[in-house]
Image (cartoon, rainbow, N blue to C red):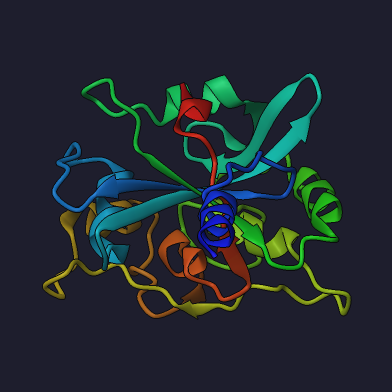
Length: 214
C-alpha cells in the first residue's frame, strides 16, 4: 500500500512539457504596483479577483528547434515571436518575471489547428477599442477567434466586459484612452478577458518545471 501511495504522489507531481496550443496566462500578484499609466495596470484593476491578476494570455507554438509565442499586444499587434522575446516583453520593472500559468484544453486533439487559425491573424493591429469585428484583436479575443469547435463556433464564452476597478470606479486611464478614440468606455459590451478565460472548465493546468522560464 505504501508503494502504491508513493507511486501516486510521484505521478501527481510529474512534470510536463509545453505543447503547441497550450495557453500561457500572465499573472501578477494582487499587491504588485505597476506604472499608473500602463494598460496592464488598468486591466489588472478591472479583472483581478483572486491571488493573481491575470493580465494577458498567449498561445504556444512549439517545434523541435524552439518555442514560439503567438499573441496580441499593443507593442506588436498580433505577432509570432520567440519565447525569449515574450519573456523580455513581460519582464516586470524590477527585473523579475511575472507568474506564468500554463493551461491546456482537456480535449487537445485539435490543438494544432487552433495554432494555425491564430496564424491567420498575424499582422492585425491590437484592438485598443475592445470591440468585436473591427479588424483588430486583443489578447483573449485572438484566442477566442482561433479556438473553434467542429461547428465553427468559439469554444470560449463571452462575458460582459468590465473596465471598473475593485471599488466600482472607472480608472482614469480608460476614460482618457476612449476619449482619445472618440468613444464611450465599452463597459458591459460582450467580450473576453484573460482572467475569465483562465478559469474555463475546458482547461486544465500544465505542471511545467520552474526552470522552463529561466
